[in-house]
Length: 193
Length: 268
Image 1 (cartoon, chains in turn yellow, blue):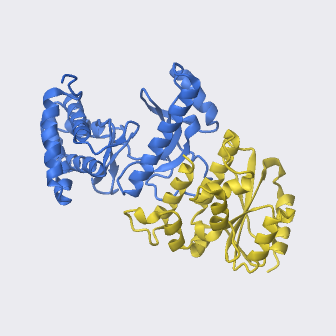
Image 2 (cartoon, each protein chain N blue to C red; image 1 turned 135 degrees about the horizontal axis):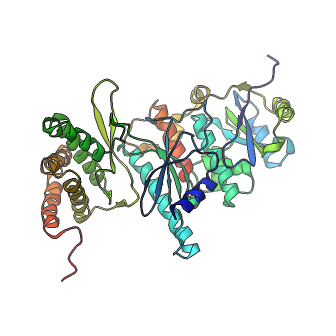
Image 3 (cartoon, chains in turn brown, orange; image 1 turned 90 degrees about the horizontal axis):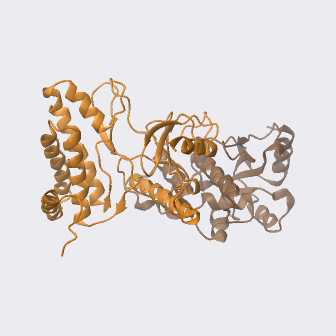
């Protein structure tokens, strides 16, 4: 299939200065290469790369974006760029390096969620098209539609339980997606408070 | 005064159609149909109502120093949000957290409850009034008994997890529909603005005492029975969890609080 890769545009009320466009790739084979380019700050790799096994729902992704643009608006950002701030918002760790390593992409990641946050007026069809083409060339993997189902297919519940300390919950988490998603969304909103 | 506050919250949350539902000394509560950040095609997970959301807003207090005010608003708002998350993770029925803007004193949470046949909101107070109107057999019938026991049980759940509500009244307790066809309800506690972590017998006894007094004043005719059922429900969880000694402590202290009132004597 040579058609354009699927994407999802994200915007939220109130904090309208920024929008995001998101992509999901699974079976990615060149994560090491991506990571190296990220470290080198290669311009073609200017995205928020999230390890998709930590994300269970679109609601969780939206809550991270919401928190990020709210922090930007309030001048409360804990990191330097919107992309790292998104990773920070979604991850349970306080240390930014921990966030990037465990929540961002690592050389053995398999599925990645790619988020490009830009000023709202930049985001138009042409922009999305160039992003799609760029991603096709830098990522060796399969691009998927971002839905709760496709995310949950990729989710690693064991890693989630460990990273977010979800074991303390008195509810059974195994395959209880609404409750897992609710928990992760709450954790995102309470991050840093 | 109130108009200015509402204008301020409308400025923080433009494009949201906010309907004021309650106003206290500390906060204003609104209902809105729009989710703070999700588009229409994505429904928030694990909520009983995905079409209505509660916005709780703690306005600034003009008499406080600005910096201090900001800090107090932020920490109280965040504190309440953390508690809601804690309750959710303990599986205690209370509004779930949806979003948080601590700096502006705003918590978004789940809308619990429904409209009674007379159009009023299903707080315990409204519901008791509603069934009292139907006559004595309803007012002190099996359903009333079940509901009051659930209330006691819910409070005991809180107390056994070392949380005290701090402001238990019959309007801070909400009936939630468990079935569309039958009259089957569960009970949720709301408004944790004055809640705190405490394992003191005194705090727990005062929690119950405050509700007892509220029931006596809003439902004088049957309050004795209501309070009796309430304590039965409260006791039942303690015995379920084999915490009979803890129950006796609360019971004993409650008797003392009843004699002296909510405030502890300043003498001695």
